[in-house]
Image (cartoon, rainbow, N blue to C red; front, side, top):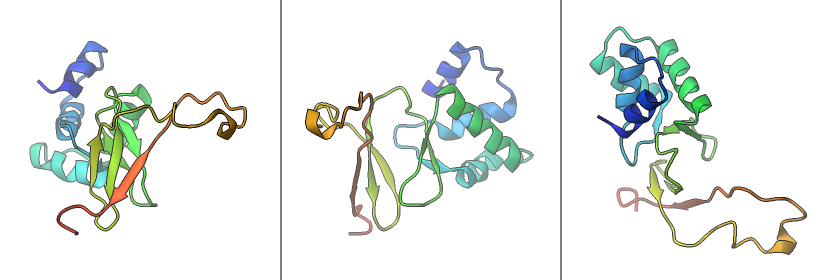
Length: 136
């Protein structure tokens, strides 16, 4: 069983066939699909699943904190199931491919106190950009 499915079962989330298919499509370490990509893959497994059901399920998963909504450079939102593993993103500037990366160090500690302007900083989202091997 996938990590996401296990987490959802542990929460007691009602597992309909539609929800299960969406969760299965999202399973993986470097999965960052758009809602339309999730729908296309879900219909291969469950042809009757509607686009609205996919969007609603993704919204629920984001609200539950089980999936992260990732937006980069004004492109379509993508959905990352690795919500419980701290990581940053590496994005191809050309094709938009996204990979999860786990840099060493603490980005919060890298922000000097005088650059915090009195903020109680609790989170840092770092996006690394470059060209993937296919685009380079």
